[in-house]
Image (tube, rainbow, N blue to C red; front, side, top):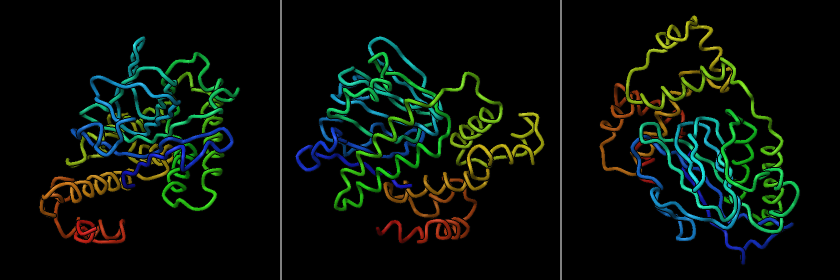
Length: 287
């Protein structure tokens, strides 16, 4: 998925049903990337060392990668599957770990809705916190619905977006955090972390299975049951996303990019890229 974010003015959007969404977006931050990425307005831009204060409530979901969230009163490690809930008007600072990066979905919420009982359930202590949700396809689906609505900018999207915000808040507020992470979930999250940290290396999944004291078939089954995709599909997807970023943002040759992203030949890289993306690496560079 390509990085995408949008900022919406209250004048153009209005506060439909008491809900104003100042921004929503998705970013994949790779290990070593500068953070935050460029392109954010002054109202939301921040230095990862000095932090910021925002007037609304923000939900930031991190399905993969690791990082850190801090307020003036507390600091949290952010792990795969964690959701950061930022309270209105509270100083905060967050950033991905340089060694892992992270994926982040976010949406801001302002308006009369903030005083409703539903949002009080979301912020019972009226302070920011981190909630472990695990890898939640339903949550990702709701975030993606929001992004698609904003991209399309079609008539009536504002009220539909307000409805999705209500669903998001209800989903998060009602989700019961597991007291104990299942072994299967732990294995899958550790495997995702390992893949993200070793995208350019040859990964021996059979060796990883042995380290978890599992047969290779059982290891593959656990990962697919927890994530919905196979080990190889996930690895290829992440390598291609990394390659696409390098194609767009660097002047490296396609051959250099192929080897930097874990493909052993330009021919194989080009073949897989076109098969999965629907266009060639050269066409991607021209876009």
